[in-house]
Length: 232
Image 1 (spheres, rainbow, N blue to C red):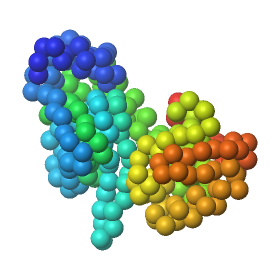
Image 2: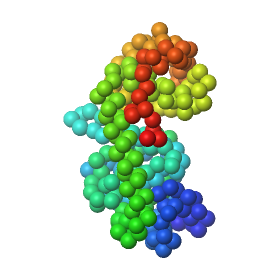
Image 3: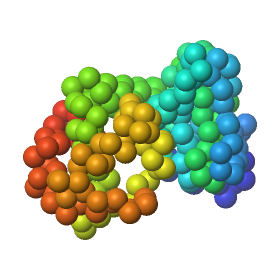
């Protein structure tokens, strides 16, 4: 790794509090790599050789079984993935591919495990990261179990609207097939869900979605902080 890259790595939340000697030990074999769109980075079932940190771009985590495939999550900067597998020296439970041109930091898993054992500040940072990931999974599971497909879509649109400045419209960050998979829906069911939302002021123009009646949409969605608040 170039010395010019070290401050950028040090600023990543996972590495901010670790001891200097530990930081030096994990970056000695780490490196940045830029991947084009739609490159498969890892495949489920393979051994976790690296921890991945998305610095630029976006990575899709997905899984396959019995001829079916589903999107599990989208990882945006600054986000880690496969941390649990790297820490356990276990196989990947998900595959990953870039959904756009992405710059990714790759750190050998064995260096992560060694640092975890000897640096309590780094261990605490990893525990916090895994706790946040666990809580995010619980929230997604609650949404899938407790909401209809239309309600899940309505809440996701409200999230994107808030993320993009609350100006009455939003740009879908992913294609509609990926969005459907994230919401646990078939693509045709997503289309029907969008049609169901028309009386609530939702109109779609390609990737652009207009929210003409936020109050009506919120009354339908019934946002729940124990599901939708990502800061909790």
